[in-house]
Length: 333
Image 1: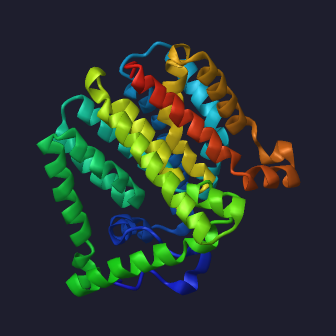
Image 2 (image 1 turned 120 degrees about the vertical axis):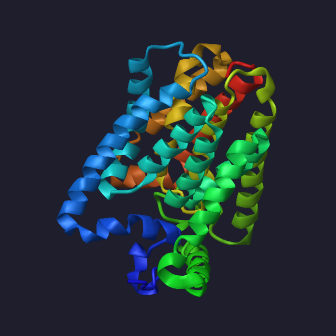
């Protein structure tokens, strides 16, 4: 109906996705609400199964049984996966599309991979982190396909709102995303780098500068991993695992359940655990165990609140990223 999408009166439930997401998902609005909820629940369960099937396919070589890799990943991320499905979020959809894009690139389908990356951006705008990665690969097919698909995505709402309305929508989207970030930084479930420093030293300029510095360091780490790709068969798998794990850390509104995107990273760490340096292997095992078993229902309200206020989950995934970096530096994956 060409109504405003970004309405302050929606408060916590304010729409924060790109305008194109509203256009593409609008057919679901023709369904009765109860039917739409049941349908999305079934789709989410199917996406969970797809994630378990596709994540091991990102490995250059599988050195452990598939069932073991899937079991370790599900146990490590179970609380995030369950929370995702309970909330009816779309991070599973984003993860499956992003992994499908990587697998398309693995099989030489550059155009399909580029289009899927663009589609992932529609589902979750932080998929834009993959765009510089496509440029770094220097494959014209995927770059051109992603650019064309993104142009179509940005123009798509004009079919409903007209071009002036489309431009106004994108401006409203940007205002909504930037204005709604600061109040969420001290939320217990926010696991981003920005939230970590806001919790540790309080919101303010110092926390912002520290978060910016660490975020730039994390991007430099990802760039270093990509730079060492030449000696590795199918380097895209580990690089995508790194980028997916970075997303909840870099996104200021990185809720804890978004760490389900780290499923490929857990698969890589489990598959190549014996090739990690001994101390890093032990530290990674401890970090994954802490992530898996830091459960609200086990720890209780006060202990869990203290645990989350220290951003320990965030630190654990820094360890997982360090393990992936070590695998790349050793030329393993």
